[in-house]
Image (tube, rainbow, N blue to C red; front, top):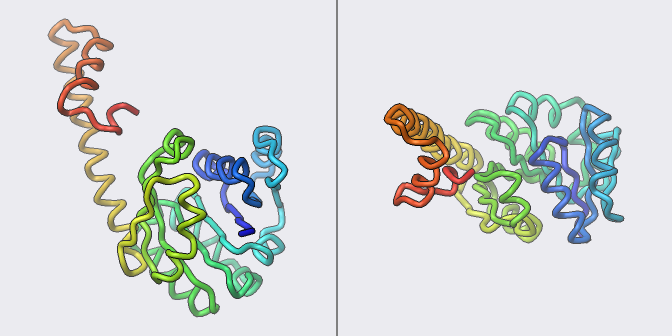
Length: 221
């Protein structure tokens, strides 16, 4: 069995842990805030799920290390802490699924490969609901063999793991996706403002948008 370590007990990381654990995959969750781990042990009542307060000890037995943290700066602080990469199994693959920005994957790739490990930059498009329905889109980049090796595990909660080439390309693609997401958010707000100012009930207006040709998965969120 592949031992998975998830670093970061936020909503997305926790949702991934739940899906993997329910599928019988050995999953360990680490988080800087211990209280979140206490809550997760009650929520994810699967025999294959465990939590850890010792990151160095946890990476020593992990085959795949998934980071899902709030920013690239945080990912770098956690993964590049003194001695952490040296504590990893030499066969380990580190997968950063955070929205880390375009610089972080290059910093991580250089440090991780120098330590003799493999790195996959893999931001996502989706939400907790898409993880639960196994419809997450993973925008992976890095060494092809590393992407191939982690794909079976990632596909347990995803619909597709796309290989976008060199490490860092995943974050570039995530920026492109987010550009449309933010533009769509603004357009929805403007559309509802026009409709409600014209006297249309906001729920009725949203129903029309969801049934119209502009309907998209993000609009339905």
